[in-house]
Amino acid sequence: MTLLVAGLVLFIATHLLRPIAPGLRNAAIAALGKPGWMALHGIASLVSLALIAYGFVVARENGGQMLYYPPTFLSHIALTLMLIASICLVAGFLPAGHIRTKLKFPILVAIKIWALAHLLANGESYSVLLFVTVLAWAVILRITLKKRIATGETKLPVFVSAKYDAISVVIGLVLYLAIVFKLHEWVIGVSPLP
Image (cartoon, rainbow, N blue to C red; front, side):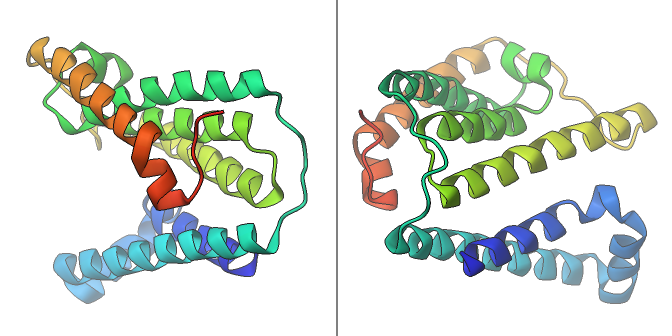
């Protein structure tokens, strides 16, 4: 699980740098310029995601210790939660409807739901490590965003139209069905259906 851990550490370091060590980030921007910093951050992010993906595959092939054995009904709950996560994810990329304005950061909500749903359905040590880490990161990031909102550093989305809620639901449902019936098995190698 060394590669998985390395990927997670790099991911956390690159994605919590701004809220945890803003001075370090600002110094890097001053030294590299904004485009240089964005390029470095982007490369580090891609490397971390590649390490996580490859590390997860290697850990799964080597077999991990089962920390708990989820009952089958939790798979059904996980599938239901993933529908909600899919809708939230889509809402985060569209102009603000009610979903986006109420959730404030729907992509983060989607990530937290995704991590929780997968913790309910998977008890292997490598799965728990991945999903607990991502869930903790999302919670920490949301807390720091709340502080940035209070200082005015981050702006909340402003409502545009309810039509974007309908679009979020439709596209989210299509995304969900594609993931459940094909993409999850094709990309991850495991069908999410119990």
